[in-house]
Structures are given as structure tokens and as C-alpha cells.
Image 1 (tube, rainbow, N blue to C red):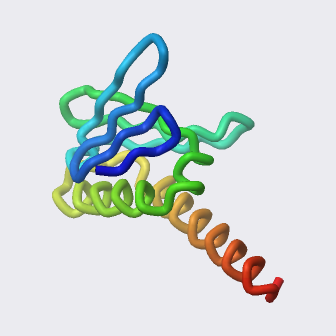
Image 2 (image 1 turned 90 degrees about the vertical axis):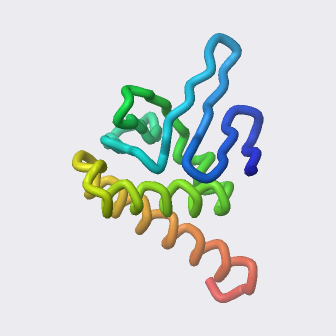
Length: 113
């Protein structure tokens, strides 16, 4: 199980986002849609085939590589199984962003940037 800063709890096939007012769980291995809208508020919106919906801050994913890897693996499973039909481009765009930011961090740590 992966715990991310106070709000997001993830396990294979599931992500739960908690706020002071609500708790939303989405089956990440059964995603129907994934949206990462352009704009100021950087939030990833996940919707599963059962209608579950959750939003995760992109900053949370960038700061927690294990969370991102779990979510990406489940989303790719959903895609292979024909469930994820909306948002494949956003998934690919986010994967590129995570890879770029991770490489930048590694280069900075090693003094190569």
C-alpha cells in the first residue's frame, strides 16, 4: 500500500482520495476515462467504468514516483483491456512530464544540470 501526502491512498487497482469533506475511490485497473486538462489547476481526473471519480494533483504524482508507477501500470492495463477509451493522449502526455521532471531531478542531484 502507498500513502501519499495526507490525501491519497493507493493499492494495486485502486486509488482513494480523501478530503475533509469526502472520500472518493476509483478502480484504476478499470478506468474508463483519464483527463489532464490544460490550465492553471494541475489535476488529473480519473473515472472508472462503475462511475467512480477522483481527482489527484499532478504535483502529488510528481512527488511520489511509486504512486505514479502504480497508477500508470493500472491505466495501461485498462487501456489494453479496452476500458480506457478517453484520455490516452493525456496519459501519454503526463508520462512524458513525469519522465522529464524525474530526469531533471536526477541531473540536478548529480550536478549535471
